[in-house]
Image (cartoon, rainbow, N blue to C red; front, side, top):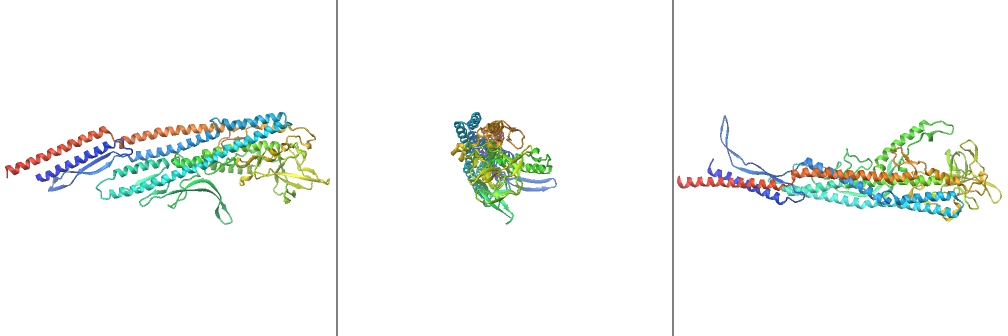
Length: 640
């Protein structure tokens, strides 16, 4: 090995040591820089020259050292764990925020404001039950009924408005995700170009890209991988957000309700909601998230604030029909006492299917769950009150024909119908002793379809006694006609027929004329002029009866007062659970971040040690060169 070759080895040592000091200084300068990853020089031998090859081995001369790579010190497993925990924390934070908003809408944590409306209508019912003849009492009852409906509708409409207003947050987060995707694509290009020569790593660009990946985790869960060219590919579900060549974009569109048309054998749009759904615009995929399946930690679908908003909001405006009701055996026993087991089992299977759908949709969203529960409370109460004033009985009317209020011919062929019990119902205090006037009405659907028939028809009551089914009317000419009050059943396919909050009002006929409120005894009972206190006794009695379950997964039922309190309590309990989960996720995230920083973070002490190490190495290389220089000088000057 010549002395000039030794010079080269010494110079390479100087360069390697200088590079090491530069890297250590760079690390120290970025100690407080957010997202910075500690860098480390990897040294390797330059190359060797073979001098002699023998049976014992090869004799070689080395030509020094060089910096093979300035690498980042990161743990990809900790990165993935950190991003998962951040994503999960942001999801549950959205559930918590939404539950807190709902608590504010309902009033206080204990639901004081709306609870007062319930109490007021209860108090007025007790008052009118003691003296139904008093116009003041009737006026108070109807006034409280109006306040009750108004307050209930205000609560429900505010929930709906909050649902729709989440569109702004959804749009903002979609735009942010699209922007992050574009920035990652741009950094991919910069990294690819900077590292194409293989001489350096684009560490600063990689830091910027990793920061974007950390930020993206707050909005949505994703998977990613890096190819040999330095490109990071990002996938949300199976759909690409960023690949080698481009970034793809999400968009928002109004949610469409579709139904299958047997005639055209195609799905057709039934209605368009005001709420937004998130879809892919340009990668061949449709919906970004599956909103028909309940979120799950196992499937990692409890992740990301965007999915958190969509989950908390739900995909529809819910009502009481979205809560499946478990079939009761007694409802499948006919008049002869025979149990229809086949129908009961079919109903049970139908309930299981609806329950599964509920758990995946309505029950999976805190907003739609509260909407459905609240609407179920109002529906139960108003139908209970209406049924007391206008009791129905079920009778077989097959073959009955007549004319409706519009003069159209009617022929009843569907077997059993619910009709007004014209014998036992209360009547109004007006001169006509009007019957069938409900307190709470549907805006677009009358309670009864009144059919005029030529002759009286009879049925049987629960004791088997014959009873008239139609109201007898004496016409001006002295002739008789009969009115059959056929109840307009609720049809879940037609929202106008439902006693649901978006469709409810206090009967405007009763508000205009209090005399129409059925409070007097029916002349058919043989009493004239008396007041029917049984109506109010029945209402007050039913008020304290258990009428419905909050959750179809739980058979526990509640009275009207208990129901609302339990609903608010359950909401508060969920909020506490989510608060605990958010707190735990924050601690877990901080723990993982601490581990990440132990690997990727800059330690001033360690970098000072490295700085001194490379300084000593630099000094050693310098002294080595000085020795070689002295040897050359001696050879040249002394030995000539």
